[in-house]
Length: 433
Length: 143
Image (cartoon, rainbow over all chains, first blue to last red):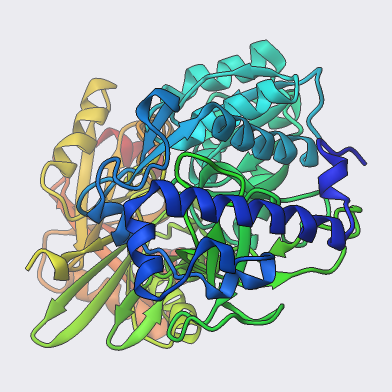
């Protein structure tokens, strides 16, 4: 059993609370003194930094939401002058303005520590080559895992995403030991390995750390089979830090949160009330370990539950369940909530390729949902009847999971776009009209 | 006795047939007969070619979803009632027909009808017993 930071990861709950209390007090002071937005918010509710005495006082603090970042675009929420910043990242910003996050040298180190803890928890050691196929750039995936790998003393290979055949060649020739990328790209790498006639067992890769998009337990098994590795989940979000906010250990029974840097709460998304362990709600983070963007009770829109029970791996840090989905990934079809990850589960249960595309539209006043699924050679039969039977079988399985009808259309194998970064799973035409 | 037919899954997208057939053209594969079964969203292109195994290989390599299916080819003389007789034989034997298509063979004044049935062996036996001509593989590929 190896840990990157045993003094934190295996610390007593009392010790962790003491660290959290001290850090919360100083981060609230920093936010109040240096960020006008927070000063106004505190003053409105008559709250002073001196009112915060321990981590238990966190519920006195107001929430921060994503639009607060947009409203203060680009640098309005930074608590430090630009001279103290050493890096800026920005989210992909599929809707509206991107969210911009600045990092001081200390912040980058905090993030690298999180990623390093994740790597060691996934079994990485200093002799390993860490093949990083997340995109490098404004997106946090690539540089996050890169700094994590360097922090723990392994060898970082900044492959970035794209040119998949060359990536596979490097995995072979360099003998990389760990692979880091999105789960959908891991599947694509698996397909490419087969296409190139390589047996995954001939690669030295023994584990992979995958994140940046929601994925299911079934997908984990699929990737493990396809690449002949153990697959670990990692959690992060650009507003807080990239990958390394929370991570899987070998028990894979919830993701350990770096709660000495990022204090988690789960709240009822409607009332904001804090929920006890085991209850699902919206995950909220307070960046007690960060300087440049000390977000207070930031609402992630991710739905999960927490547990403070000690893990079999020896870690005492709080664990979060795999997020069920992000409230903003959620589709509402005829009044029913649908998460794309549910469709992935159904397809994998039916032994089908989990590369799918959801097309949502509105005909008259009625929402329609169509799911495009790739035909696989072994599914192809020469008769129309057999193909329609397959489509119908998927429709029935989807209906029983989603409680709403989705038309299934089989498309040619390989015809849905393969993603090298975050997979695009939904086309919502209702928004275009 | 059974003919290897190539079946290709085709999405309803313009240009798709041109792509598929140009793969065959580039590999010097000659098409003997074809038919398309279509629905709103997809179709199945069924082909009889001179080199079915090679056709399957090159189409697969080009990323197409392909399968080989065994069908029966029967020769029907150009006289009224000849085709009806063949159909009656199958119907009397209780053999179902999934689909069929036909072409006129070049040299012998007969039509070649390609049939996919529920039971190939039973169908062939019944047709032979009633003196309906079953074309051999090589003959069809070279027609």
